[in-house]
Image (tube, rainbow, N blue to C red; front, top):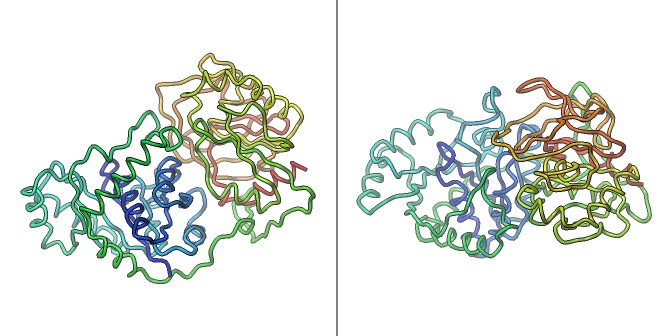
Length: 461
């Protein structure tokens, strides 16, 4: 039995992250073990959640991992906790484009049998708030909206009007928050600035969010609502256990056991301020597959960890650190040498840019015969991908689901041996397979295809 709340909103920009992070920090400050979760593929918000709770922020993505994995992944993350807080994505009923409710906050709330707290930006309304809340509460009878938190309330008079309007709605007001500049988190071209880039300021912002929530919300009522959630009848997810899909997309149960090796192959995972996008389950899966995982920072470390036999470079903001990454020539050469040796290298988005010949004119690792640059165009959306060729990630024909999110372009967009064939929004091939290198813009969540980690570690031997 895990007490749990889903923090949702009618639309983006209402203040979900502020409220969810503030609640996590406020409850953690009371001595509760709080498990933080985020609906969707977002990498940045979980960093703030981790800061608030002292536990890894975890994603619940029904598109990339499948609906059947949501409850198991949730229970895995929430093991041993007193309370779980799940921050939603976009508007409550918004999900994958043209896929109905798939990957929406509402769907995840139903899969978790969790009560929903609706965060409403009340800054430009009074009595109309009742119609808005009523509409969201009645749209899907399987979604239980247990309360509302009114955000950006201007004055006591404004609060009175809002409470009066909501008095007959049947949805209790569980919090009222005033406008507070101290809780704001700066944004840029892909969303919030990650914690790793503003550690001290992020700590202050999370503390301010916690104080705002403590003073403006009924924490006892919120905790009681969380504890009203029924038992979830599912087994917690475990690294190395899952579904292994074949090329047609269906699967049979499998258990991936670590290969018997001594010593364990060492997999280096890029971190630091330039490479902040990662899912906690990836490291867990690599470890379960028999690897020793070591993190390094391409901005600071001039060499790969000693004995590196495989390299994972996830997403992040290399475009913000192009000159520093380029200046670290010893590491760039070490990465190029490892790739040339045929060792497995998995690179996603930021990792793709780092392996390119150049990024905005700054020399990168030169593993790929391609050049990258910033762009005005935002590329965003879920992707249904098919492996075009065998690689360290997947055999040819294997299907995986992923996500693209970037304001850069790489030319050419695919190598002579491409990584993926994408089926939406338009058909195209994308990415690079070159020796042991698999580099692509597509972010994947390996909990949805746990055999990826086992395949990768096998090739590290």
